[in-house]
Length: 491
Image (cartoon, rainbow, N blue to C red; front, side, top):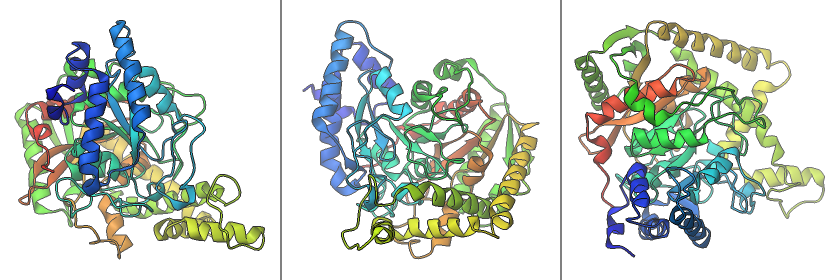
């Protein structure tokens, strides 16, 4: 193996693509390097739930053959990409980090998996998450707790904690997560990388295990905005199997990074800078705002008046949809089945009792309650109306702004176990991100500083529907002038 492999772990996907194109390295060498890196570090990080070395290397060999023939399928042909374990890949485990699906192997590919295979990427490993993507710390996994590579005593965020931690640890150059209330942006912020939740409907949810169908969206994690743009261009687009998939032209996101230039009008929603925001996080975000102002951008204070209603609205809608979606895990078909049963009712009750964690049960019970007779109108229907009002607040702000800028999270990564006993405190971790899901808007987090303890701080940019190209360009302008993406934890 080439001696340069030890320097590969924190190269960007764009740089790795160039090395493959120049034939300075093969996909097999590249994949082996990430396999070895994972073996050397994952005992402490615990980002991966499973991986198949032989399968990954076979994919890499096929990629090398295509490149040797001068027929690469895309710029990312031969570059490893890891997936959160709630996305379907034929023949691979699809556990959602839950005991109820512990032995389930997917018989089909998700839409995003099909797109990645068409692009020739090496599908590398299954990443840990909060069970069924319900959580903000990756402490709710049925199998293991993922650590933050910047401080192994701290959480990486959630629910896509494995996706963020594997990237921050140099175990993969790209990964995919899902974002229902901040599950891409929050861990990206806490792990010091870039994470993007696209507009609802831009990426098909076919093959993504459903948590809350009107909120779930798949998105990329990467070291840089350009890498996010590369990966987004591969997985975005219409899919007839997803009734919420939107037909829209997919631009060349990478080209747009250079072609779309400011100055822009940047809105600063005052509600994001109030009580509960850590002073160091606030200072870093304000420094980023000052940067944009120095670049000639117009900075404008705006208001999202109903932002304080986002948290209760989200937890009614998300739990109601979770209750409905998780009814399919019944111990009858492809799930865990309790052995301590006497009849069909026992199978249903005991299988779910044994298979689901406390957090998942909590959300199912709450969701079942708000959907029950006599409460549907009072809770679920009212929450949907409030959701519309929150979206209207955002759209009004966008009448005079190109993008909104906020902190991604109110604090840096907290210690493991610090909030486990208090679900409400845990839910508040997503207070700055959930309104974006309720409104169906695109949002991304990118590094904008470090705390006095050396922990990453994330900046959130929120864009207009289906204007990902503009959003990425505005983020790229900040990233290009700073070196945050070049900093990595020491493991």
